[in-house]
Figure (cartoon, rainbow, N blue to C red):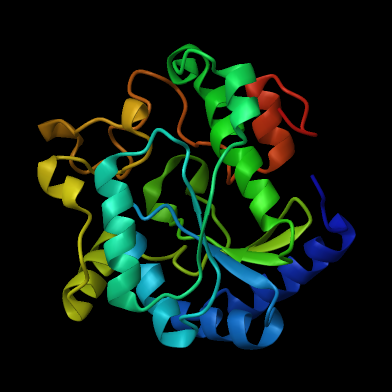
Length: 251
């Protein structure tokens, strides 16, 4: 894996956080994509329940922006079909699908049930490492996380430094109601699993329908019965590796 100089990304991120702290999402995206990191930035999307908002914004600014999608090999078929349909509808022209190396999966998860026995390691092998490889050419990337989703996202900055890169979170201060209004205003396509009772959608074995008393919990149904709340790609490679009990140089 390769990292940019963290001494570069840290000051950059603080300057940009000061600049964009109160800025609307569209302005952050426009300046990040067209000016600050022109040609050196990518969007990372899970094509989950709320992903269409950020993808739609990007499609109106730079439809040719690289969109990185990590296919873990454990995703719902509905997510893959939704991804393809949304890409066509929005006119996105540079979808890049990445995934774990087969030999790494064979070494760490030969039976295919690592998600059950060690979910942190499963996420590291299937998501964190592939994404780090895919991000290696880029100096910045864009995420769709929001503070209202809770957990480790509560104090999310709009711009941060992670693994020597600058990461933009333009929707950090958006509420669930803001997301719903944007979907309605632009008549965006919804993920089909939402209608089937899913709220936050990740890998199939680790995603469950929400119960009636969980409907207000933003990430209910993920890693049910466990303390785990993040797959690891937003923790930074070293912290994700530590939680997985692995060396951060790779699986």
